[in-house]
Image 1 (cartoon, rainbow, N blue to C red):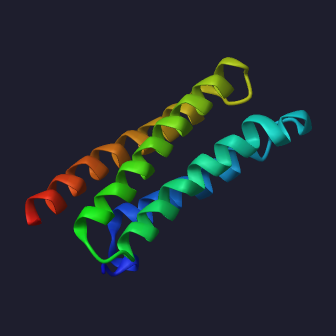
Image 2 (cartoon, rainbow, N blue to C red; image 1 turned 135 degrees about the vertical axis):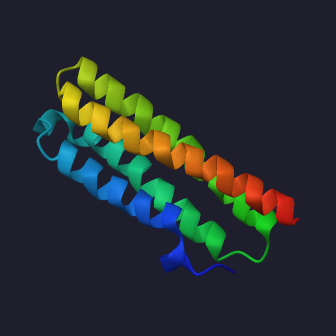
Length: 119
């Protein structure tokens, strides 16, 4: 079991989720059940899966949940690019969010490797 609050990757994923909520707040009402909801669910899924993995009994289980979190980060990346192409998200905000996602993906990969080396 890992101390969740001390995991840098979890804290950064929380920050990304908050930023996605803020970025999608201005999306039109007709996207409430589309890109707004989908982007927010993907964003929240990242720290949620990190948290669930941290609470598991083995590094192997933790790696599995980190893999799910990583998949959610790629989903979010895709949804944000689509939002930008639909002019719902400006280039600057897209760039900032994609940079955060890229950093999380790199952290996730490194963290998984570290956990696998401990097995």
